Length: 258
Ligand code: BTN
Image (cartoon, rainbow, N blue to C red; front, side, top):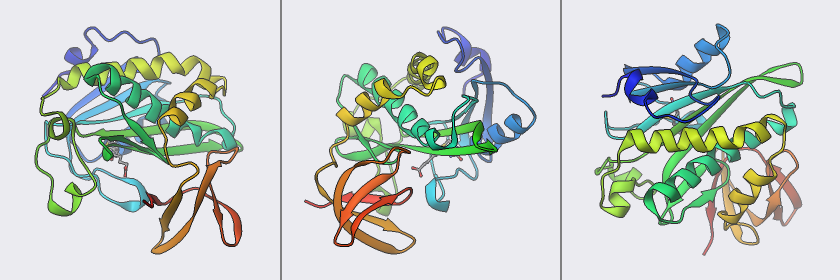
């Protein structure tokens, strides 16, 4: 259980984490961050919780996490981006998490489209990006991050796909140190991201994404589409070359065929 002062002490950031809201238990840090955003809370606020009673994942799923073992937080940002640039905030968050993980653990990571960070080929972090627009501009973005740190047990179905740092590395990690490192990495990328310059983020992300040029399957609303992952579209979608030509996807689960 952390207090706001615990998490603030030693945090070296300018914008990201400039305000912290800390809860023992909450429905969802992302729901709370949205309420704060709608009430006018400024750029860089972070909502952190030790436990979520209705943690939300992508595609309407739940995000389940044992209390007090992992990192569950949402970052409220207000970069003045165009709508077509906004999906890149997922890659920005993933690159920041991956960079922090590599520094803290000394291990390499993988980034998987659209929003996962993997350790030893298994997902340890999920990111849920929720954007709100005013006409064609981003008004605010809520970046929800769930990172499995010290949770040892997962239910059977989940343990096929998901992991945690302690399961992979057999060492428990200091959650506060890890959180601060992630916020610091986000803060360092932020000035360029705010200008809509994603080159450095995308170089980092692409260097850790191994699916391009490979055959993949994407599942979307119960349907599976196979093809070769060609690259990303200008607005961050995944371009697949299928038997019907090239198609761009904006959501779905991807598996790489062996
Ligand atoms: C995914 O499905 O991979 C994304 C999971 C995102 C979970 C995080 S936990 C903190 C934040 N609050 C939520 O309710 N969801 C995100």
